Image (cartoon, rainbow, N blue to C red):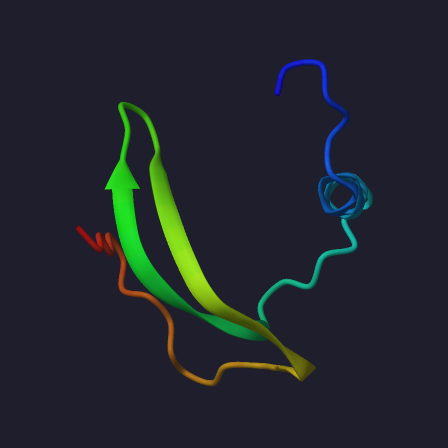
Length: 71
């Protein structure tokens, strides 16, 4: 709703983004993509069964191909 304060998790995420403290280049969890909807300039990924893993995993040799387009 307009005028409502953002949820606490949003504030925490924004703080991490600003400070640059988010992990990069590692797997931090998993989720099931239930569906994807497209807008004019964006996509919405609807996730379920989201789980964070206890320790971060570094992927080995699994880079996305150049020009990867999932749709």
